[in-house]
Length: 178
Ligand code: S3P
Image (cartoon, rainbow, N blue to C red; front, top):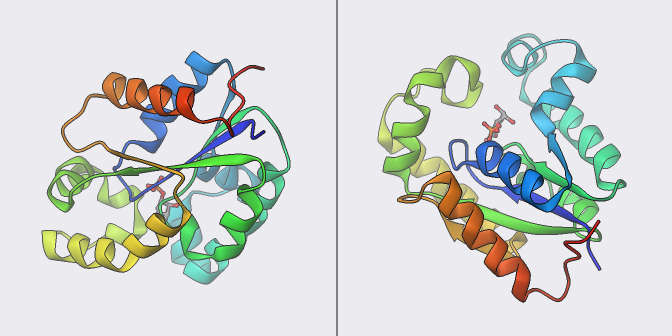
């Protein structure tokens, strides 16, 4: 039985907001991978991208996931690009049910508009077309990794949480008890 949930999905899909509520409801520890990575690196993700580049960031992401995947009873919010390296999902899968929170490009664009500075991959990309293109490229990775898919586009955080909990109740592979 798996004791962790790992939330995957594009920036702005609601991984952190939903993850926090889910963790509270399930009595599990909430882990924000990006935050942990920043703490370990001693600098923000924007600075890591600017000073060391995306490849260095991805290496740090792999190390952080390796550390976290070995622990139990957590709700893990993964960075939007964590699925791009297969090793991350391979390490998470044995003890984590993978939930893809998806959202339409329009909704993602709306939700991320004001936070472009904190998200290096969206910096300078202020048109919907960029998001559509990135989503198209990433969709097979999210789809391939997901055990459960929830479309968050028109839903509140509470409603998404409810839907996830409903799916978990049907899933014999997940241990919701601590
Ligand atoms: C990224 C998403 C970000 C962060 C980094 C790269 C991506 O996380 O890990 O900026 O490649 O989609 P969020 O999805 O939590 O914003």
